[in-house]
Image (tube, rainbow, N blue to C red; front, side, top):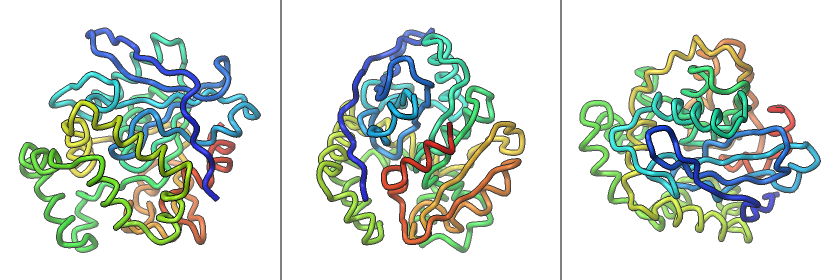
Length: 284
């Protein structure tokens, strides 16, 4: 069953050393153990998870808008490593230490960059977008996705132009068309549906460029030294998830030292919300 996704308890923008703003939203006790969230594709800081159990766990969930999405200042040409540097600055300025992090869907490679850079102390990848540009997936991708991946690798600027045609409604339609029936039922159930649509609208508030850059970075070669990651990493996939990883993260887990992978029977890509309790309890 989908867990309610209430509006954040606290929101704000942190000014980074270069003057840019990084938007954030929080749930749970202000003095709780911080857990960062790197949200999924084209969503904003608005869409948290597990809000009903955070007080009991003593967890302060802090969701971040990536540059160009929601309330965060755009940073054209940014990289995955740049996001890790932003998170390092954010955690330092807000005195969060080395918090745990959850990376959902397209937010996963950004979270992995933070792990490889030593910014965070533990990581949970939930319905994680895989490195689909890896040659091992050459024959596993549908033709249209294969074309976009090849374009993102060979001509990233051209790929960004393609993704810049997206809108909140286009993203909603894409997710609904590509998700199994169980996920569609979860996503369209209130109050989640309204919260999801609000997060999409917020993510595109500055236009589509932030989403376009995110997608090119996620679809291209990541350039992350996964073998260097030295923190606990857990991967969560629903057995019915057809959109995030052709092998449900088996290959991705094998590239991260000590990574643990869970595949949940009867579940799809909505695990962050349908199984928030298990994910958060293991993470902390």
